Amino acid sequence: MTERLLSDLRVGETAEIIGVRGGRGFRARLASMGLREGQIIKKLSRVGWGGPVVILVNRAQVAIGRGMSRKIVVRTNHGSGD
Image (tube, rainbow, N blue to C red; front, side, top):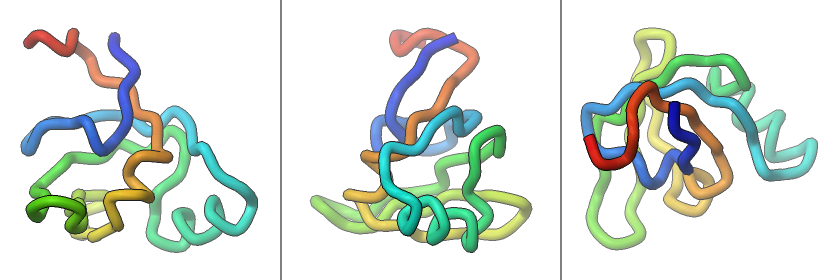
């Protein structure tokens, strides 16, 4: 298992959220979008340089900013070289 940032996932990869690097307000904002520790997500797309990251969570597509995606730690089931 490999720990990475959500921003580092490739399109189509699935991972589990294992941590959030942010304060109470940031965590609450993510929770309102269904993003919490233990949640399984799939990266659907990313838009250019600095654009949003689109993920699938609970059968809903959610777009979050690139900066936000750099504060979400995820765990994948394979090494980064796969």
